[in-house]
Amino acid sequence: MNNVTTFRIESPAHDVFEAFVDPVKIGNFWFTSSSKRWEAGKTIALTYEEYNALVEIHVTEIEENRKIVFLWGEMEDEHAVTITFKEQDQASTIIEVNEDGFRENDEALLSKIVDNKEGWVFMLTCLKAYLECGVTQLRTGIVK
Amino acid sequence: MNNVTTFRIESPAHDVFEAFVDPVKIGNFWFTSSSKRWEAGKTIALTYEEYNALVEIHVTEIEENRKIVFLWGEMEDEHAVTITFKEQDQASTIIEVNEDGFRENDEALLSKIVDNKEGWVFMLTCLKAYLECGVTQLRTGIVK
Image 1 (cartoon, one colour):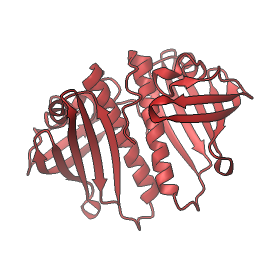
Image 2 (cartoon, one colour):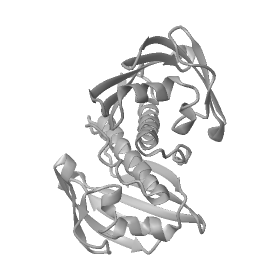
Image 3 (spheres, chains in turn yellow, blue):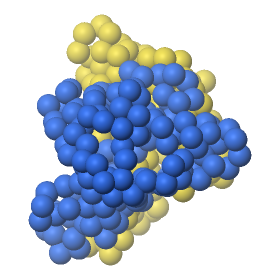
């Protein structure tokens, strides 16, 4: 089972794509730090200092300005995240995040998928605020 | 079954509360318009022009700067929404939105509660951007 979240961001696809892959930019809207530039075949360490979290992702596919695919999660419960960037015109991009791998027979499916939705909607709204308005202070606003 | 979303907003509780109840303010982060000031016993018409939606809510309880309770939804599937405002200090408020009334035997429970989470997280992030940074352009960024 998958979980899809879609936003419109008033920025060129290149800028939206770079916000993820460039480690200098991610701290403006999502994780605190990213260990290196996202490229296919690389494993990236992401920290979220405010939530005392360390996450590793394995990037499996990159199409510049168009698509990022990575794997994350526990060994037994790995999920694939596909982020696509569709430029509508030079000043507007539709970004879709599709996380796949939720097991339908998981007793905790409902809470897992609701928490997952919370995370993606929050990150994408923070990304929109960062790219459109230069606002970078929202990313620690959610209380867990 | 209920769905809870909690944010920290760096604004006094009075300002966070007024953003909901004052019809002049709601268009900065959520609905396009609100028919009148939210008070206990009133029915309020809310429009969302960009999504071609009209919603009515019935406000059942107001504690100034502390709590708002309203009912919304279809006759057979009415939900109660409780919004609480806890001022941490004069410049910071914890806001919690608790929507109750999801039926556990509803076949569409999963999609309903995930959509519901999407809406509350999006609205609360837009509210944070509005109150902390004066940013009002995010509220139509989600693609349904």
